[in-house]
Image (cartoon, rainbow over all chains, first blue to last red; front, top):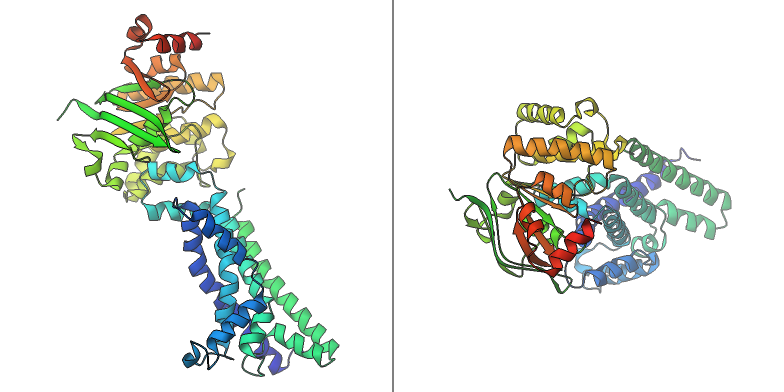
Length: 217
Length: 242
């Protein structure tokens, strides 16, 4: 069953969209989380609370809002992205970005607050300071990446809403599991679930290995 | 070239909405170590952070090498000084890499980094620890590395914020001796913050007494002991000698 071309295609699409969404979330979340952690400005606590709330956004709600934006009758309808893999990437990025941002901010806030002063006091530029703070917090930052990926590879609500679960085009592992279950094909659903679990485990195993290699000895 | 490397005029620094430090006039001569003493919360560290350009004064002027700090590019200024805090604040790197850090920030060539780092590891007695990671060092070893990291930069101004406070007495005494020797041999200009009068006396040419955010008196240790400026200074001195 696992060597079925359709399963390969579904698995490959799941990995593509979730990896891309996680990557974009990292590009947004790492600098934004850093700014929130190190900044000293009015409204900082409020922004942090918004980000932390965003970490608990229900995927199906995100999917609904994005779908309404991308429908032909919606404000971004002309982009013709609804029911495409890119629509899933957009929705998953909205889900993962607060996770990566919030955990990045937490990781940097957990560092000794005098460390940034020490780095500046040694003549670091702001960029150099940020680079070394990221380096010091690399283990929790990697955990933020894993959490971001985990939040999207396993979601179904957003993928269903904006992707439509179209065979050969937008069907991913989670939406395929829902479909097979609704058809009463429990064996197939369970097999796909096992595949999703193994995939998630292998990816996290690789990231955990990298994390443990970088752990303080 | 002026005799004074640092001049402070009418300085006021605010923290958390209140005045943390006020100094009307204070100067630091080239090649001099100024000891800054006072009780906890007096404003000593505030002075140090302001001199390091890590805190903005609410009012007043600090002149460094003849120019107001406002005229200095912040990064250029910070690369002329070096700061050592009470806690070593070493990074998750080896001893050698930690000491080389400031030189890397300045883009110093690798060969020169190696030479300078080796020299300062030797001066501060940590050359046998060069490949050891920072989290494997004792408190005394870590503070030596922190000092080497600051000295290797050959700063015009060295700012030391209670560098011995977290150390046990024997380690403290040894490190104090070594630091005293280095400061004198190199004619370094330094500000040394401490609440320990004996340490201040050993390391410093002059002392500035700060209590409740105000500079109360400056002079040599003998002058201050012989003629405390007011009751507050007298009370502080007698508290420390108990």
